[in-house]
Length: 288
Image (tube, rainbow, N blue to C red):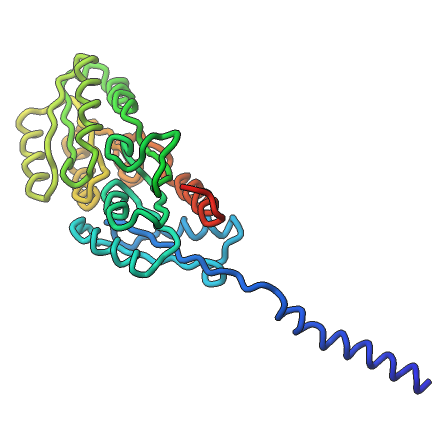
């Protein structure tokens, strides 16, 4: 009996001792440092990226951390912020739109860059081609120039007699937007629409645009919401359009959720899982 008890104790003790040894033998997971570069401000949208990464098996603090750089609507700060991510030696940079993508590309040719929402990346020199991007940039393209005509057609469907339209856009605040708008103007001409383009890169220019709309009374308006100015003053545009009973189509659904009439673009909510999937592939060794 005494011998049996001794053997039982040794087995249990052996089990207890083995647990910490097995734990110590498990490999330590690498913590991936992912930079996020945006000319915007901290907002709930960026909760979507870590949530999408978690669905792929990542756990913040255990095998990845996000290094955010917000320009707070000051695009001139992007080069400095991109350089700071490079100095931090992040493993990858998620760059939101063209201004951020270009700033990141100028800051590094070796760290992988994932576009969240690129526009005409080939024409802007960000990638060699859509099929074979080359270099260190990959990701998602949100608007093909061919959609420019689709947006005008949707507006025409809503306002069948529309023959005079205004285009509110900030070309200086969104690199590549001039190329997209060139297609927009061509589409308008082919549809017999007289399109007047107004530059809106500041609050003063937005006021001037409102004044001109009141004077000339276009049939409808397209608002390209990608620039910081039009995002900052989104509520004013929506209020103005409602007050003047002006049909407006936006290139982002956010204004529609706040009371705007209609929009046409990609599903931005779907960009985050798609971006997370690309980030996952690159972190696992895929060539951008």
